[in-house]
Length: 327
Image 1 (spheres, helix red, strand yellow):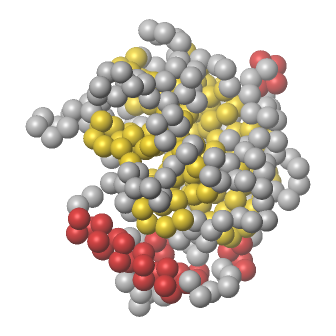
Image 2: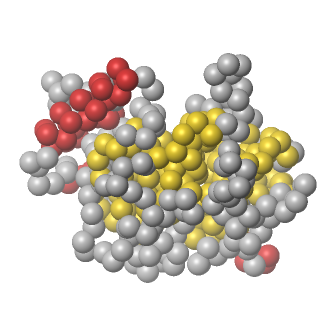
């Protein structure tokens, strides 16, 4: 993202924030939480597997589990397709992972490495050391955007920005482009959840600080999401976005180069309070769900844009919970 685009983005965000800053609430209907649909246990119950991360790609579901060196693949209706064994050249236990059209990128927090496979599970690359070849990474939060890996490193307390595109004379695969933050104000302690919006904002959930912050993808702080005083310390473990537009942001007279007004709500799994929090595109708190005690330790989250379903991987319950957006 060049300086001109960054300036336009920041200016647009500032104007939008000024517009909505004096509002006391978001539109009531927009606060309606998703409705519970079902919970899925099989095949997890017979195998004593606890799903911890869930990703969707087209009409395919990818799941990882606690203490398991594998990724299971299902249809959107959770019919088993196959497993990818992450054991070659050595076992990898996914803390987190992302799916691209040709890649699977896995963060192994305990091993201290980012490992890259093709979509068939064939090993391609592994990155575990900084350029000094001494300092080991400790990746936890993870996302991938336009050929760049963003890794939330809980040991270094930084976001590591790593190229996974080979552009001769510009970048090479595995090159550490930069890390952030470097200031003493907007620090990170445990960057547990990362999400890149399609306008290029990087959302960072910090499980130790109990907050979510928005940065530009080149590491410039933009704003913090609303704090949640009614809950204990929030532990954001996963972030995804639905497509339900906030009516309160639809003032077309406001300069908006970022396209925020057409973005949906962010859904954030909170592993400490066992709920999902919703925020509007500017980080204003919308509400939390479910109201019951169904969730035990929600972690992974994925939104199905076609069916408007939200999938929650809960390793505490050993289940996938399915919710549907109410419009």
